[in-house]
Length: 307
Image (cartoon, rainbow, N blue to C red; front, top):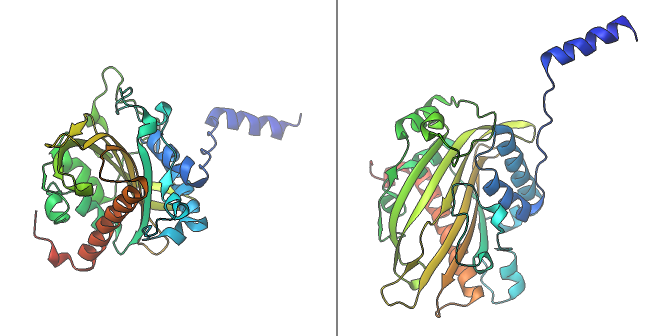
């Protein structure tokens, strides 16, 4: 072996081997589950998930941007439906076991491009008064910040995000969410809704994660939210229940600086008032109303009072 080869090998060993970047998921089904499973993974893994998302959007999702199924044709509704979750898909902070079959939680997706900058999205999503932001969508809404909101907001303002170089485990002994407060915001959200024509009160745990991630070959700002419902709820009449609710909301800058938003939700709804196709229509329609409201507020911030 030549001396120069020995020197190069020695330098490589001394520097350490840089791990290969994670492989991006392919297609909507894999991408949705990847983002849920890997929510607490390192930044490179999050970037891989967002890369998969933007590739799916370019290949297929753009045709569904802002669309709602309006036909009773099951093939139309199927474009907005996802296969059920498996237990392995659930993030570690979610309920790891339930007396309800995960097959009962129907998956729905919606995608839209928002006329918002990333800073505007951060402001809207982080407010405590979501019933004011999304006027008419919530009967009531209260948010408790379980980690330091000021630290999280300061990272947005400074665009300075401490790197998460290895996966974190919120269930590990001694885990302190304050250690990643600039990057991951934990919240508890008691709320009321008349979704699907049924009045329900329940609580959602929602965690936010933001940062600058390598998406394809470009660094893009992005925000992810991970949502789960810790307890089943039943309406006052006793005939309508929301037993399970799992979801991921991904908001990532595109090349024009606007935000591509993908929402995926798995809901276990027990109601005699709706069929599968109608339920899909209602859920996708509501997600799109939220997207339209965000774009409206970004286009004219004066429409929203100060928090």
